[in-house]
Length: 207
Image (cartoon, rainbow, N blue to C red; front, side, top):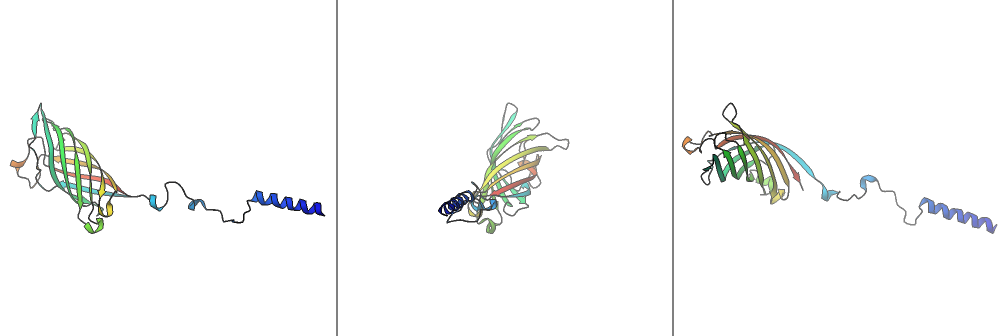
């Protein structure tokens, strides 16, 4: 009888080990709730896409362009534009400082600069703004006398509700030698420009 009791006790112990018995047993954790490095509410990333148009609303200011070796050089032209976006967090007034190098005959050449968008809806942004850099290339002239510029822009939110958010966009500009509302005598030397209209798409990432 003692031998039988010992065998039963031994079998019971082995079964308990194999089945994972514990005094602190708990329900298995569902994969959906398991901790994964880099996941969870603190790592949540929300991406929002937007479309926009932009065009200048003031005469450019800055140093006069210089002609050197058949190339016009522009440095730190300050430009002000209206930025009309499908998302109110992006819509507002854009200011940027641009430098460019353009062939004096064709008008083609690269450009780059820094930008800042002050959204009109300060209640939504909490007083924050966007800023960043851009670069592009102007090609042409087109048959209608315009040029085409493709611009790539990167930026981030500063302050308020958008602080630390990231944004990126691609813009296609139709560039004119002058622009309605800007007197002809204030237009820069051909083929430099004071006017354009842009259409683009972008996105921002909430952090």
